[in-house]
Image (tube, rainbow, N blue to C red; front, side, top):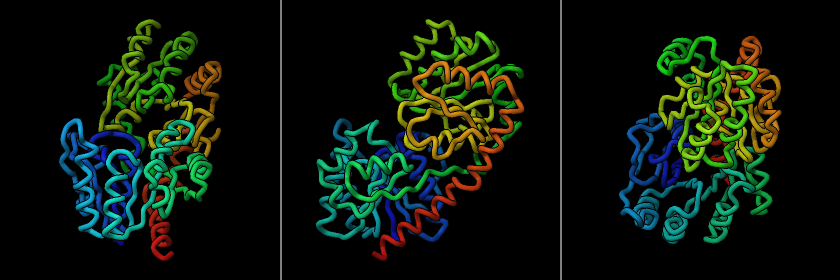
Length: 369
């Protein structure tokens, strides 16, 4: 079986989709599948996850300002030359559509559209597939949560197979040495309770809601700090708001990093309260590191999180966000209990190994049909 993952930004961005691609590629080659990753030439010094040497990485040159056009011939050449059985794509308008339409004139392959984002958050992404008719070419539709799959089925009127994202529980695990080292580097005192958010700094991700809640939390629990990992258009606005609320000493903007386990271990509570979220890899990683999680009641969180491993809140309710943070901040024993259950859930159901078995079974049935 020859499988390709085609995604322009695989080696340019540190996000969930890029993590999913490399993680599944690594697992599938370990299970005997021939896997290629087709992408634009990378700009990252390091990826979040090292790529297994058995994965065939194809990084193609592009011309500035015309990158999504100039990558197309490279994609077409590779698709024709290698005769993949299955090609998986995540977007339509970064060179994918033109390349796949051209290549399909010369070679046959099964095309899978893999959705890691919900319809109600980014409807234009869904429309881009219909605009270029890739939905008609597609053999299968895949989604990373039931929430996402429901939107896919409503929009395309086709079944969508759910393959949840996984987690590397060997890399993401409780580590007291990392905790002590990282907290010391950041100047965090032993009795401080640290909140952590890992996401793109976009309006819909809800980081601003945690910032707005922090003064109310600190009023009752002054030993609270907030670590923010990620980058995005909202960073400057968030930094300004932190200043206005006089929170600067207790909020750290840490940018992006490939050393995520250090920061999960330095934290005490993972907080992510977006409007709509598909299935957060960051939330799973936090749970694998033994953190209790506070997440919003919209999107795919409720497929993984319940009161045994965290708290689900109304993202629009500051009182609920503040209440959940204060409840967990007040009890180390409760945090430990919830965190332990969260890690157990990830180990049992949501490792990359388990989910890659599911994906491989999907591929096998696809080729048999």
